[in-house]
Image (cartoon, rainbow, N blue to C red; front, top):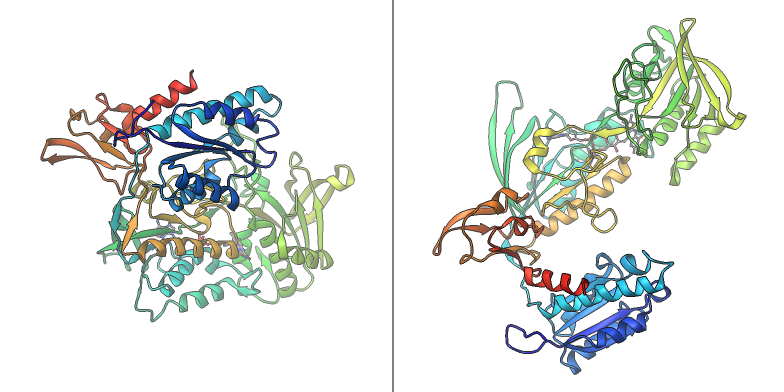
Length: 591
Ligand SMILES: Cc1cc2nc3c(=O)[nH]c(=O)nc-3n(C[C@H](O)[C@H](O)[C@H](O)COP(=O)(O)OP(=O)(O)OC[C@H]3O[C@@H](n4cnc5c(N)ncnc54)[C@H](O)[C@@H]3O)c2cc1C
């Protein structure tokens, strides 16, 4: 039997969820409910059809008030889905929202053990009992507050960065937009006619960038790089090195609440010999074709010769684990990208349509694995199929081969629609439809310590629930720095990131998560192991009234617990997940 810090016995309410049949079909929820009712300090134990329904939440609120519950356990789905919901329920019932534990008995018990009801029930019960042990020792927590700065830094002046700056400025936030090249626009500025706008890429960029002009709350730095970046959400300090011309350099310091990273992508660069690239004349990439065709009307020429037939080869550098080039000698195969780059089917079909309009009599062959002109872009594909475009599908394991043929380019493709019979083509140009790859940005990555996913792009906290936030509080990602996107998707993510950034900049004070490390100064023997272990540089050594001790910057701490694990004297612990709570949970699980 436990006692709270006020010397009272805890009064715990437990709510086991059926989740329709998602839990109840595989876990004996009544058995779990009855067993939990026998646990010390459990005053209420119920099983409910849907814990998250309004009726169930109201029932919990009534129980809190009528039965004087001072903490609750919800045994239901993943806390990622509904922990916030139940914190709200607890608050409405008059409890501190952290006097709650949300045990996951759906993903971790019922769904994981569908064929074993007894085992699933035992596991669900163990999880819920551990939750009871946790809340028995819970103490109310307060969210730390920090002052914020009404400005945001946007890094990268492509279409994503421009959009983020426009949105932030319209919301009344001061924006510092930093672009490393001498002009705004990124890749879009270099594109020909872009889908679905039917305008030149330069025009799309100019139109957006013009919107930035004359705004008092926007400062644009071109020819600029980030030299230093320190601080934490609400109070970052950045040094921007501006060199508009070689020789001229200026350092400008800015303070911001948050930063949006919109540094974009690189185009996949085929290896020498990959589909004849660099070894067969007339093999180019899609970006190279775009510059070849830019601004020229009448005739499309390559190497002084008129182009009549073009073969687009799709998925170059995408959806392949290894480069299509055979390794030479003992060299391992070059790594390529397993993912689909999303924009390329649309961009290739769109480019072939614009070539058809701009230059008469061009025949386009599209050698594709799967045509992914999703959504409204499917109309473009239909249009191309009706025009002078011939689509030939090949299997991933049978990529086309390319060779020089009588001064032109020979392509052999095994058509999957003709039972893999080889089709021979002779064309003037082979266009490799290359995917997007992460942009190497080592200096910036080191400065910001942004998390990078296994695909090499910046990684968000959660694809569905927190798609533009990173695990560094206040640092947001936008556009293709996060992964392949077309312009429309880039703009949406830039708007999402700017809305989130504005939510930090526009508040005078920010509330942070309370699950942060805390030092017991009387136990701290200054081993400094915590300082070395902390991945967020949140712990410093300070001269305090009790002597030289480790000190946690709560604004930087993410509550990961790395410091707790290495402290030899257990002087550092996590608020809301103390060592006593962890031990109590383990003991119950091992019972
Ligand atoms: C050949 C091709 C054709 C395409 N056609 C279409 C189309 O028709 N329609 C469509 O919707 N999409 C198309 N796309 C996709 C489109 O180009 C992207 O969606 C868009 O460029 C993404 O914009 P972004 O701002 O995220 O990245 P980017 O365009 O890459 O811009 C990033 C910017 O950040 C800057 N930067 C990078 N690092 C730093 C740093 N450390 N400090 C400061 N600045 C930095 C870069 O200089 C750049 O200006 C095409 C892409 C290609 C390759």
